[in-house]
Length: 224
Image (tube, rainbow, N blue to C red; front, top):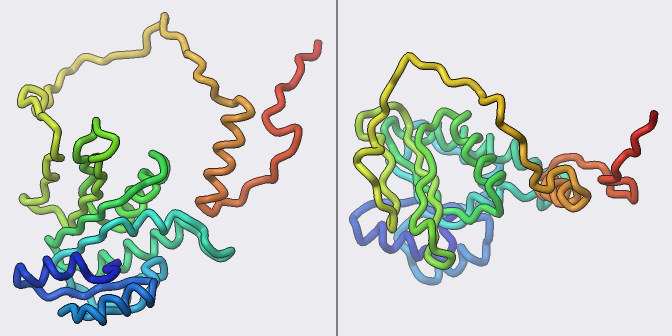
């Protein structure tokens, strides 16, 4: 989504031509009033984008993709909307092109949902995090590539330190099995609060979920 076209100005200053999409007409009206140089389209990206194959050499999105994980209408299914968007985007991008999505996922499950949908559409790439240890400066990016190229390498996140000794992978013929002394540690899973929170997350993602009742999360008594 392009919003009011602030990011588009930077792209224009770098000598590129750009096309902006947004679901909000009021935001596009602001962009028109500001006389941005890009072409603007009123469109819901969850329904896919209708551009010819190989149209785009690059894609940028700021704080938009996470909204596809919400079911704002009864017929909205997050998994289907993400699938339609990424599949149509992959078709519209030239081979070797790149896409960067800055997003604010609600939780790790939402981030995995978005990433999985992108990979199923044919993209390669992964997640890059700037300042992972900061609560204010932390930024999450989904960096995607079309096709397998030698230049398809994820950038290093800002505020991270890479140890060169950990960049190499060593292979061995040894096999490691589970230790017999390993014990599972309970972390409160299957409790009533855990179940209620999980059901609430599934409702926000558009999944059909049973209604809560007084029996939700209730422990069954052992009978002999």
